[in-house]
Image (tube, rainbow, N blue to C red; front, side):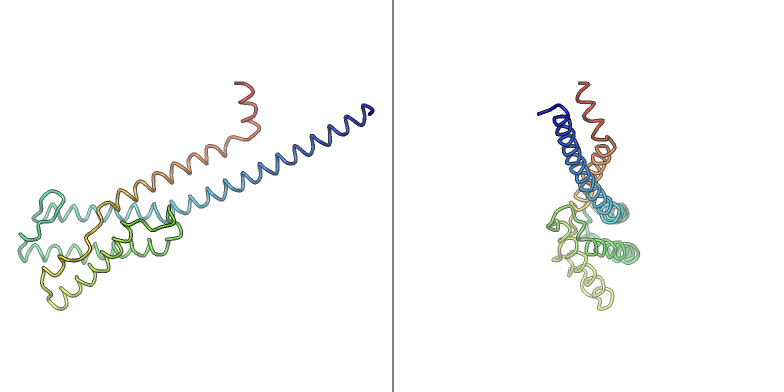
Length: 196
């Protein structure tokens, strides 16, 4: 085999290897880009707004703990008088019903953006809690239902705040890692390895 033919074959092999490498890198870039876009949606459309709403709700509940008879982070409803109940109903009607409705609507409308394929138990419990709380509030207001009627409904899941915070942090960290890795071009990685 003459030298010209060998050079041509090596050139063709080099071109094929470069084309395969470039096609692979393009596929990796597209996959990273799609993953980054999905992470942006998860953070911007679900977990970011959800985190703000559950923190706001917790702040309103903390106001009730400061203003009404309570023990630590528990309302002491058995010691409430009519004025305390009126204050609680005001907080519920003015703030919590609206916040809870926004949270439930956000979870239900953006369920496709959840971090895991299954809805977290605290989210399911929160949705049940809100449905029962809303109906009990209306019954107690419209039909003067006994104040004790609410003692059997699903309690507010305190772990929802921590779960949302953890999911938000994990998604943000994953997005940052992808962002950093996509800024470093593949050729630069090769040369960096050679220099080491």
